[in-house]
Image 1: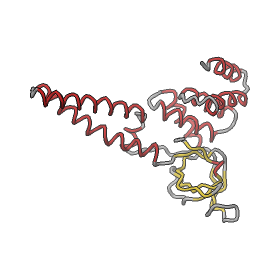
Image 2 (image 1 turned 30 degrees about the horizontal axis):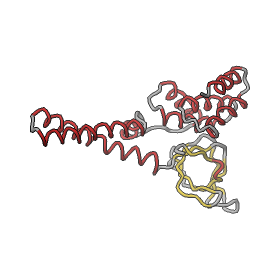
Image 3 (image 1 turned 180 degrees about the horizontal axis):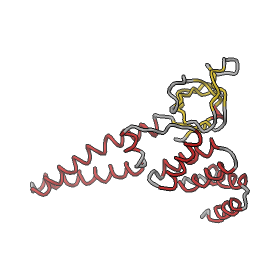
Image 4 (image 1 turned 90 degrees about the vertical axis):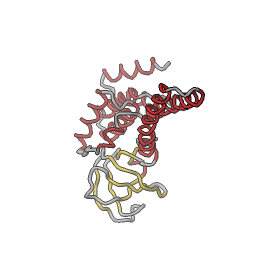
Length: 225
C-alpha cells in the first residue's frame, strides 16, 4: 500500500539524501499512522546518517519494541547505545521481557486462557484423566503468562521510557530561571516522571549517579507513544 513511498525513501537513502529520507518515513508514521518495526529501523538509519543520534536511538527503540528478537534491529540498537554511552545492563526480568512484545504475550495469554476454559468445561462434563492433566498443564502456563503480561504491561504503560533527542541543559526545576544542574548529551535513555507546561521531569536510567532534573519537553521523545 505504501510501497511507492518506501521505494522513494530507499532511493533517497542510496543517493545520500538523508533529510528527504527522514521526511518520507516520518510522513508514513505521523500522517499515514504506519506502525511497522522496519519503517522505524530504516528511519533510525536515516537519522543516524543525517547526524541525529538522539532520534536514531529513539526510533531503533520503537523498532525493538515491536520486533524484540530481530537480530539486525538488536545489533543496531546495541551499536547506537554504545556510541551514546548508554549502560544497557539489565536484570533477569528485563532480559526475559525484552524477548517478547506486548502483543505476543497478550496473544499467548488469550490462547492459553481460552484453552483452559474449554478444557475445564470438558473436565466438568467428562472427568477424564487426560482432561485433568491438560487442565493442570494449562494452569502452569497461566501462572507463567499472568506475571509476564503484568510486568510487560507495566513496562509499556507505567514506565514512561524516553530518549533525549538533543543535547540539553538539565535544570533543577521547570523553567529557564532555575539553575542548570548539568548538560546531558543526545541519545541518553531517560524516564519521564512528571510534566509541567512545556517541561518534563526526567530520571536518567543509564547514569544512576545523576539526580533527576527538568528539561524542555521537545528535547525528549517517548518510546512508548
